[in-house]
Length: 262
Image 1 (cartoon, rainbow, N blue to C red):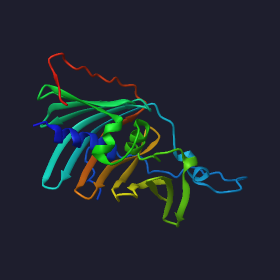
Image 2: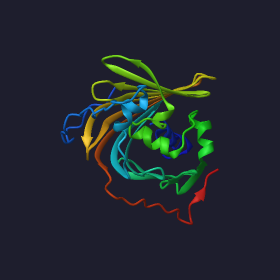
Image 3: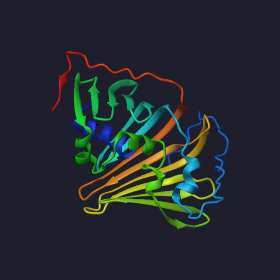
């Protein structure tokens, strides 16, 4: 049931993070409110001066997720739990039909996937993941992608098109062009796009159904798309029971009987 294809899917979710329908058991949260933006005394209006108050600090994050994956004729539905410690750890437990099938631990150097059904495990260096997903991101940027935040420091962005409805900022670090599209009235990210301008590989993350959770603006629904010359991959993520800054642990142990898959 769990194989290397499933592992690529899991990594793609972590790297690549049409809204899903809202679940009836969601707690109705306050309407997202635009932060107060103070540009008095600022001679040049920049992405940082407009958006710096939208990036609120955090330490822990946890949530449950309903996931759907599709690539070509292959499709899968998963239940997952995710936990994160800022800039350091992403932990996931993934289940099929209520049975835990895999546990994943991502740190600054590597991704380890524990296949509990097949009793084996895989280890990927962060440098290896670019060859799977065509996106070059570090763990801090993966976390920001999941949380619908700018991938880089706001100082590194240029202001793009601005209208009464939308605001765009962009970052060009050759060969990658990263763009974030904001909803102007509340300054939440509607879409993140990463484009490899050499081979035209494109990844997009679309965020919808924002809600205020523990004081943080967070999208309860995310749709991820990755497209290259050979295939297109789609992942939808429906979050529930989400918490910010509630301390969590990251249980992960590889039994000696498990074989390493190369």
